[in-house]
Structure formats: structure tokens, C-alpha cells
Image (cartoon, rainbow, N blue to C red; front, side, top):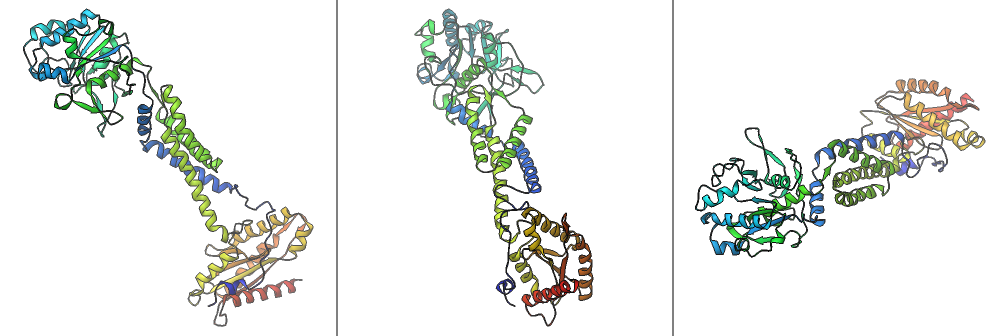
Length: 511
């Protein structure tokens, strides 16, 4: 067998230049293809919006990079390393130390005091501490197992309690807290931060919705951490405690104090996180978009990336992430990562479609959408080795006097005539047949698995179907020649020559 140069040697290829209403132009796509791209972008955007938890990483970065100012009403009294050195381990303390601290805070005019200390059983000094725990502005931290503190505290009867609970994510990071927590028996118990916020005048709520724990600016002037030892010894300025929300808890390092990871993945004492929770409650709340709003934003970004094309997808993706910053400062958690990912998905669909077009550009005729001469060459080469088992039939079709007609008419009319011819050939071929545009007004049909008689009948039916080809200025006759492989046909060129000779005989006989 001879290769494609042998086929290409038969007749020159003349192709119309860029003018014509069917030609593909850069940046313009068939409506059907655009609809499929839009549908794929819609489905991808919905899936990405529902399945990708990427926004939390973005919000962590914003929380770290844009810390909020601490509420000046919140003060932490830390049981630090110096306090532990002076008074020993926490579980060995005489609890009258807490009584002395509470009395000092009362004298200083503190608005409310939260004891973020989980007492265990009875101990010395309970008699001095118990009456102070009954004060309405003293809040005792408890656990979900004993929300009222009956087994933990020194036996006060009217103590205000709040759960000392933090929402720890699977990666060990504390990102959220709640105003209330649901217990095993179904009841709701307020958190320690909620009780302190109520003491500051905030209206009571029993919401279990997770709230974002804000990272606070490291400002010792507005969120001081005073030493418990200094408080007990009276070495504090009362003015720094007046009308404050005070939280007492462990800040000591090592085994004495329990630490948690914040969004910066740094160990932070639990009492500091409780202070952040109180400041977060006292600040304007964050608002989050509903799931449907996130889906709609993702779909809009993906569709816009497909419709606008070019680098607009990158602009939408970057803009979504950039928009998250001012909206975060306005207390709105914008799903910038999800919207950005949806825009990139639309951009990738456009890139994949363009890659497909470039890959097939050399084998597709842009006017008719049929395979061109190169595609015909490859199709014949693919079938040639099996021609003994499956004979190859070939039909060669052209329009009589098309060039003179095209010169008289407009280019658009000539292109429309070729498109009409191509559509007619598509509509009359069998499912296994393939149509190609061979020249400016010539078309090829490859017919598999036929015999000479059946091929002749098919040629006659196609000739009848093409009798209606024409324009408003008059009908145009189509000439058809056919040939089939056999022992005397050794090359594809000979097959094409046989069909061409029959076509010319039919044309002259008709004339």
C-alpha cells in the first residue's frame, strides 16, 4: 500500500478563504458546543460548591492576618509560672486564695468574674470560698458531665455556672465556640463565655450555632493578662479592673496548664481562648452566606468564565479571593476559595475545549464541519488492510458549474449552497458511512461492507436526493461517481480515479 502522499496526489485542494457565514473564527464557537460547556460548568460548580471545604483555610488566613481589636472590658488573671512557684500545684492549693482574689476584684469594682477552674472535690478553704461563689456576678466553669458543678465546686448552692467547652476540629485547632451546648439529656447549658457576655449586658441566647473565634491583636494595654499572685497580694491597679469582665484561669507552661491550638497552630492556654470567645461575642457578629447562596455564586463564576473566555477566568478567580478581605473586615465570611475554584473549573473547561479544537483543527473543514482531505486519508489508511473482508465503497460527489455560480453570486450564497449539500449528504448516509469534503465543491463518502450492486443503488438514491440542491437563483445538478475495492484496485489512488472517471461519465451523459 502507498501512504497518504499517494492519495493527496490526486487533484489539487482549493478551499475558500475566511469569508463566508459558516466559517469558524477565533473566539467564536458553535452554539451547541457552548451549551454543552455551560452545562458542564453548571454541574461542576454545583459539585464543587457542595463538596469542597476550602473556605476554612482562607478564613484561617484572614483570621491570622487581620486580627480584631480586643474588647477593652475583658481582662485575664493568669495563674502563671510565678504563681505556681509561690503556691505549689493547683490541686494542693488552699482555696481561700480564690476567696482573697474574689474579694480584691469585688473591691476593685469588677463587673463579673469567671472562674475557669475545674475544682475537683472538697479542699481546704472551701468554707471561705463557698459564700463568694453565690454572688450573681461570679461564674463558675463546669463540664458537660456536671453542668451545675455539684461534684466539682466547694458546695455553693446558688452558683452561676457556664460550660468551659471549646470546639476542637479534627485537626486539633480551635476555630469556633458556641453560646450554648446541648447535653446528653437534651437540655441546653450556656457556655462560660455566654454567661460573661450576659453579665456585660448582652441579651441571653441559647443558640448552638458555631461562631468564629476571632484572633485578637496582641495588645497588652487593652487585653492585659495579670498575674494571679499579684492579685492575691493586692499588687494591682484597681482602675485596670473596674467594670471589667475578669476571667481567672491557668496560663502556666508545661504540665500545669492545658493548651489548645489556635488558627495559627500555636499553643494557647484555654483561658486566653475563653477571653477571645467573650471578645468575639461582644463584637459585631460574623455573617455567613447560606449554602444556596454559595452554590449560586459558584455557578455564576463558572458560567462567566466559560462565556467570557480568555483570561477572564483568572480575573474572576483572583477577584473572588481578593473580595474576601474587605468583606471579612465587614464581618462577612465570603466563600472566596469556592468561588475561585468554580471560576478555575470554567477556565479549565474552556482550555480543554480549545485543546480539543486544536487537536482536530487539521482534520475538520471549518465551513461544513465534515472531515477534510487529511481526515479522508487517515480513514482510508485505517480501512485499507481489511478491504478483502470488508470491501470499501467510495462515492465522489460534486456540483456542476459551482465555480461560475459562486462567481456570479455572493460568497455567502456559495457557502450556504455547500453547507446545504453537506447537510443533505449527512442526512442520506448510513450510520457506518463517513462524509468528507475533498475539494472546493467535491465531497467523498466512504461506504463499508457493501457490494457493487448495493453501492450502485445507494448512488442512485443519493442522486435523487441531491436533485433538490440549489439556490434562489436556480437548481444545481450534483454529479456522482462510485467505485469499490477489488483485486484490480491496488491503491487508494486507483479507487479514487475509478470513482472520478465514473463521475465525469455521468456528468457528460447528463449534459
